[in-house]
Length: 173
Image (cartoon, rainbow, N blue to C red):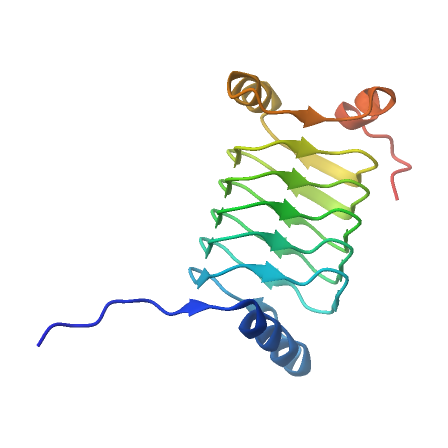
C-alpha cells in the first residue's frame, strides 16, 4: 500500500487560531517547516513570538499595522508573494536570514525595536523602507543592491533618509 505523503496546507484562519491558542498557553506560535496558503493578520495585536523557520507561504504574508511582542522568525522561509510589514511594530527582532521573498518586502513606517537580520535573504521584488525605525541592521548590502539592480527591482528609500538607513542614529525609537 502506497503512503500518502501529501502535506496539509494550513489556511490563514488556522494560523490565527494557532496564534490564539499559543497566546492562551503563553508560548510562541510555531509553524516551522509548515506549508501555508497565505497569511492575513493586518492590524492584529499578537502577544507571542511568531516562528516560521523553513516554512513555505504560498501567497502573501500580510502583517501590516500589526503589533507583535517577541520576534518574527522567518529564517529560511519562502514567501510566494509580498511580505507586508508596513506600520508594523515588532518588539524584538525580525529574522529574515536565508528567506526567499518572491514579491515585495514592505517595511514603510515599521518599528523593529531590536535587530533586522537580512543576511543571505533574496527579495525578488522591491524593498520599501520609507520611515523604517530599527536598532540594528544586519545585511550584505553590496550583494543585495547588485542583485536588485541586475533584476531591475527597486530599493525605495526617501533621499533624505539614505544616510539614516545606512548609519542609524542611537535615537531610533
